[in-house]
Amino acid sequence: MNFDIIDQYESFVTNNFIIKDKNQIKLLKDVYSTWVNSQKNSLIFKKEKKSGAYIHGKVGTGKTFLLNLICQFTKVGRKIHFNHLMNDIHNSINKKNKNEKALEKFVKKLSLDVKILFIDELHIFNIVDALIIKKIFLLFKKYKIFVIISSNFHPNELYKNGLQRNDFLPFIEYIFEKFNIIEIANKNDYRRLALNQSKTYFTPINKNTKNEFNKLFERLVDTSSLISKTIKTNSRSLVIDSCSSNVALCSFELLCKSNLGHQDYKSISETFNLIFISDIPQFSDDKTDQCRRFISLIDMLYNQNCSVVLLAQNPISSLCKIKSLSKEFERTASRLYEMTIIKQTK
Image (cartoon, rainbow, N blue to C red; front, side):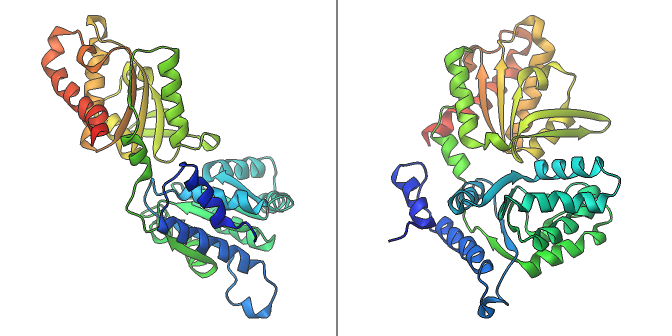
């Protein structure tokens, strides 16, 4: 009996790496059958053949894991984060004077080794990508690269309210025509479930706690596909180097030693669902400004229902030693307990 993609999935269940989920199994079957049908030459399947599969759904539902599983199982696939793909394409084009030829050369070269391209976390936030994306996908079709897309957005929600969006709409029409569009109908957020079962406040700061903190981050994100994001607030920009589309790893120094304010923290909380913050010191009188920023940061993350994982020098109860901020920090401490300690017992 042949070992198929569902057997591969079941092996992860058996080894307690994942929880068995009928919605995930259905997604695997749908995407894999779309790929198999695309490879058939029979005229019977000509009308059904698709150029790829577009999977959308809420964060934490396992899209990346499942599609990566297909990519690895077929042994002819490659996974790439959408930002990395676009960076590679723009770099290739910028080295040449004739952009159209450079773009085709890039895709043709890719097709020599890749038959399935898994593009993770597709999103369109700028007009440059919006105007070039359909050309790229037409070349994927020309060079017979089957494309699997994961996105937090339904195709109709891509580049919503973007500049010159009418010029982008033909790409959406192309996706509806040529791709199997599948929503992963899952109410479970497995990332939050994993957090609920994990320690999320690490103290004191030492080799062991740093290791635990980093291991949890590596468990919840694909570290091979980390990207850099620039958070813009008015005329100010904050660059976060280690993140996925909705998870960020930041240092306390980046978030609270710089002159950031309420609006900056609001932008951060609207960009990410989960934030890891490392190297939080004990607050003494010489760190009053940093403590005020930390209070503002936690208030905003709490109000926006963001999850946090913290690496701090002291337990919550002794984190602040500044008498003038003791009353203010009582609220912060209460919120930290709720965000990191209490939820683990639920």
